[in-house]
Length: 311
Image 1 (cartoon, helix red, strand yellow):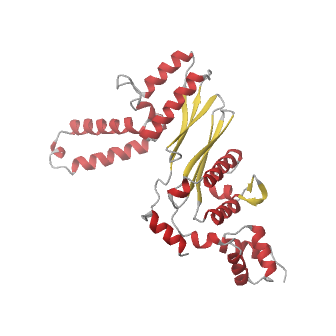
Image 2: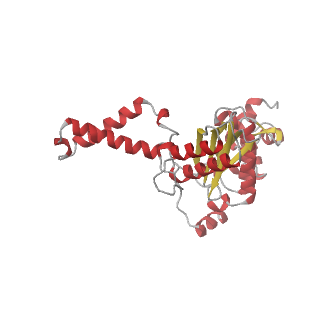
Image 3: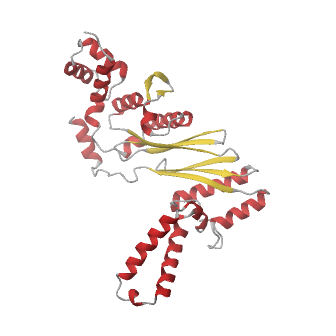
């Protein structure tokens, strides 16, 4: 029976196995789809199938940098923290980061369909399926982002062995060790305090208006505050919005290493710029925290081992 590309694609979607493995299975079973699935299961290539529904909310973040000018940050998830600490898994994630650095893809779906750098006969998805078979847990390449600094440098920071990863793009005519150290200090600031924006310039007027609307509703629902004069209420709203912006905007935050406990990140950058003899500006940052927004399973290690043994 002639094996078509459509049959190979269907088998890949059913099992998660690699393209060449699927083609071989179909050839071995004369195109019988059910028999091909069984063939792959017996040979270990379809291990991903029964693991794909399991929650992968652990894992690590890794960053790849090229010439201090561009970087890629990736998050790859595993089911357990035990696997996240596995050297084989960590080496694989580093390869994924290098793949992302060289990639021209703009979304994760296109990225997964790219040719794997280490073996162009496979896709990135194929490489992941192979890792699932080797490691024995559901794994997921969740996201990636690239960042460049053609007129400065990029600096990275990994916290907690990969629990949090931060990369910062700095614009500066002078790029020396002091500037890089300052950027790394701000990477640590971002890791610790999790700002959402570099500055207020990035925040839309719609967002501010929406926050004010919510605050006004909260005040109007308070029996005491709602009785205050309109001018006072408007002042309260402005004050609360400003307090929130100081928390979510990097340059408005108090610099974590400030000796006086008052210096903002903006003032710290002014100090760094003066010492460097050039304006040092944070253009962009990316912060990934492993598993953020994902549901995590609650199984103890003994139960996990027992579950693995009973598969």
